[in-house]
Amino acid sequence: MFEDRTEKRLMEEVLAMAPEGIDTRQGSIFFDAVSATVNKIAKLYTDLDRVFETVFIVTAHGEYLDLRAAEYGMSRNAATSAKYLFVYTGTRPAVGWRFFHNDSGYYFTLCEDEDGSLYLEAETPGTECNYIQNGDIAVPCNTVQGMTSASFGPVYGEGYGTDTEDDEHLRNRIFEKIAGPAENGNRQHYKTWCESIDGVGRAIIFPLWYGQNTVKAVLISPDGLPVADSVVEEVQRYIDPADEGMTVEVDGKTYVFGDGRGNGQANIGAHFTAVAATALHIDLSFTAELPASQTAENVQQAVTEAVTAYLRGLVLGAADGTNIIVRISAIGAILAGLTTYLVDYADLTVNGEEVNVRLAADEVPVLWEVNVDVLS
Image 1 (cartoon, helix red, strand yellow):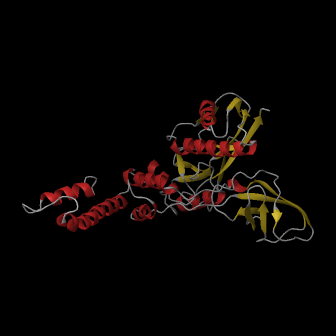
Image 2: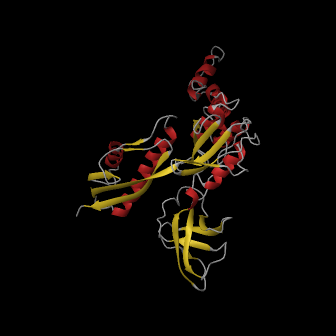
């Protein structure tokens, strides 16, 4: 907004206003007298430009975007922790005991669900702990007398960890709420309700999914992963509590059916069902020629980060009503771009085949394994 208010331009204007006959050359008394003031004014214009950036949704960032979101009754979604089923033999350790995962270097706390299930919850929220493999050893931080083994099981309740919502996603949610229109229980209204809950990055709404006055929402985390069961339950309670315990079976799956009594945000008579997206595991395999400075482990980590970002972009950027396609050519382009880690690659397969992977409407791709066969 004030790009032309530079120190040079301001100095030219001030010197042009000097009384006739005054020496305005650099180093003159007049020049030196006004230069400090002009410098300060130029800095004030720069600061004022930054102030304007913080007050508009399109340019605000960080805490300033949080303040704009609060004006619309919205807040940034907080990070959540990954959860894994706890598998052990021997003596049962007490809830609250801490365990360590050697490969990742992260600590986990043993928790118990209402049904008595034991699971390990990452002490560090975020996506860093999402890639622990089923069967990895869980190292107790203190000796548990009588426990002969402890390990991580599968992801518990689709409990993938999520990072704190970034500025762009929060900004888009604000714009969606403003421009909806989200009112009277229309499709956009359900989407806005769902995405207002921490842990929900995107909601795909399916009207009339089980007949008249039924609505289903498939919930995706801000990192493009299935949301945790606790998030599904919170969304269900918020929009249409399922206190009567009604369920329906569709295509071999059992779904919770909201009461439709208007005890949540949904209108009376509207039966709402919240479900987590279904994770479709993506396994990559390829042969690689590596530079002397790299190892297979380094390449595996770099590919995991790059492809995970690609999949997250697919999930969160897909338009409603379109199914996601994981393209092998796109993954090949990612590998080709990792020139620091790869000299060349060949024989790339996705889930064992050299074809694109097409997902169902309620599925999200989750990178599971990256197998690198190093050429000797």
